[in-house]
Image (cartoon, rainbow, N blue to C red; front, side):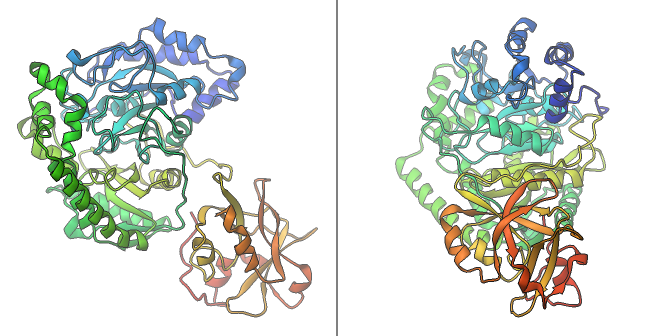
Amino acid sequence: MIALMTTDNLAIPELLDGYRSGRQTPAEVIERLLERSNGADAHHVWITRLSREQVMQYVSALEPSRIAELPLYGVPFVIKDNIDLAGVPTTAGCPAFAYTPERSATAVRRLLEAGAIPLGKTNLDQFATGLVGTRSPYGACRNSFDPQYISGGSSAGSAVAVATGLASFALGTDTAGSGRIPAAFNNIIGLKPSKGRISTHGAVPACRSLDCISIFALTADDAESVLDAAEGFDPRDPYSRRRENHGIAGLRFGVPPSGQLPFFGDAGYARLFDAAVSRLTGLGGTPVEIDFAPFLAAARLLYEGPWVAERYAAVGAFIEGHAGAVLPVTRQIIAGGRDASAVAAFEAQYRLGELARLTESAWAAIDLLLTPTAGTIYRILEVDHDPVRLNTNLGVYTNYMNLLDLCGVAVPAGFREDGMPFGVTLVGPRGTDHALLKVAGRLHRASVTTLGALQRGVPAATPVPIRVWDGYVSVAVCGAHMRGLPLNHQLRDRGGYFVNGARTAPLYRLYALPGGPPRRPGLVRVREGGAAIDLEIWALPTEHLGSFLAGVPAPLGLGAVELDSGARVTGFLCERHATEDAEDISHLGGWRQYVQSEDCEPSLDARRTSL
């Protein structure tokens, strides 16, 4: 077993704080990382390491005066070697296929423009065909915790580079799980964004209609920072989409029944998943058992159906002309798509549509889905002896996601008794990427104490500004519109989503107004004797704000509410005269505490705590 490694603190906020304070410079950090990476590559992370001269050209281009405006100023990263970096060969794990692009992939270019510093290109399963990380002529990429075990693939080198402290973050790709499996096996965050959210222009395709650029990072906050910089519509990518953001209104999380949770004999992983369910419940979630069968059936379509033909469409001609340059298992899988018929393709599309419709009942009952990222982990020798079947086992919980147009975040969730990492995946509908990352950050902090394979603790949560997407307006609610309470549906029915919990500045009194049902609070700003009151911030589509306000009865109205952070947000306030016969409940700290007290019984279950 490899001991935990010590290196620079490469979490993005800490790096940037060091640059701003003058404690370190990008050149100093990069020099230390180059020194480390230039040693023996025991894990087989690299395909191409940039020279010192190449890297320092990027460092020299950074203008110190722009540190405040470049969100990834001086942040080192690595790139899976099926994604283009200008002037550096792209091999896709096959030397005979290599070419040297003149332009960087769109995602890489956007990261460079944000100030990030590339260090090199990383190892992968050849042509991104595999979930194991062993199908490479550059050597089987070894797990960062134990070199006898697989690292996970296909984005193997990218994940191990982050886990071992060679870079702050990495780009991978994810068609069947390649951005999530390696994250789970190396104790890091793996974001598989919504399809089309990050442009795939400049990436060697696997299944072009399904491919996603993925992000590996030490924390969910870091992954979100990278997503912010990399995402955006790209007219050169025919599958690129306009940016969309949706929230997660609650924390009802779906869990497959035990009969639909294969762990392939791994009792340790089974226990760790049960613990993850309990942990997310402890964070305020409500587990809901769902029928996972349609998801599993969709997963089988990816390799048992005609989608393999997309892989053949991408590189089949090369394989036919260079059979000896392609690994036998890779050639076997991709060649399997050569004879797929158009009839089979349409039949599979029809079947996928049926399965997607069947999953709608699950999504009607839940806000997100929780699954293992993988049911077990294998040693490299095991995979060598049975490469296809064991790889198939690893895709059970990942292969359906792009087919069903979902997004997901792989989150570290503990360790087996032998020290090997375990991870879970949070799954949400398209466009919930940022909302999932918020939940992922909380679950990460509650589950493990170290980042990757490093001697670095998981950082505590940091306050973040209220973030509401274009086309939405934020509304602070302090009573029956809160989650789990009688009027919450008025927000959800209008497409509103939960942003975060908050507290007012200590400038308010809270009253239980007479009348009802439902009982209503009155929040009043006072000159002295104020208290801090719990709120929830919701985002409401702008076009529905008018109909929402029309249903708000006097003496309530909307005004500017000051938060304990000093920010102001539109929220419910009450006319002072209406509190003359009302009960002052400010000492309880919030309406939820009041409805949970013996003085007032809520009409709905209000025990769910705010995120």
